[in-house]
Amino acid sequence: MLFFVIGLVVFLAVHSLSIVSRDLRNSLVERFGPGTFKGIYSLISIASFVLLIWGYGQARQAPVFLFHPPAWTRHLVWLLMVPVFPLLLATYAPGKIQATVKHPMLTAVKTWALAHLLANGTLADLLLFGGFLAWAVADRISLKRRPDAEVPAPRGWSPGDAVAITVGLGLYAAFFLWLHPLLFGVAVR
Image (cartoon, rainbow, N blue to C red; front, side, top):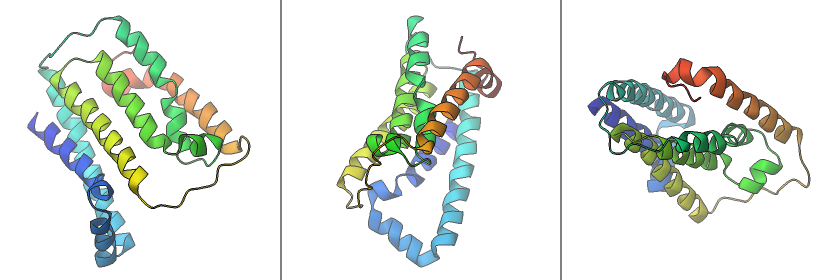
């Protein structure tokens, strides 16, 4: 559990630089240069993510149950997860979805985390999904307070929206049918 917690804390801390202090982040970029900063940021993110995943897998071997969720929550997860992949893709596909939701990545993370909190009752699940949910909420609040320029919303649907929806729903189906059990060892059906 120790490696899991260290990985989770470091991963979320690195991704909280702009939440905690935008000035600190900007001074680090100036000090190291954009390329070096991104490289260090990426290496720390990848290393902590690998540690988080490995530690979570270890924690699942000896779970500490906090509660046993009712069976119906698994079905609720299926429903809540439907928009997650389209929202993730909309983050990188400019269009109506991105402009309307404003921060589709954070909305996807919050939805994913909440859905999984409802259906999983171990301490590791609470730390993982609760940590990501708390981080996404804090980041969204932080973004509201930042003086970034607003991006004008497109008038209609764009090809990016079509890609986000079709590929996103395809990814949802793939995770539902094959990838979730393959990657995480947990069948969703």
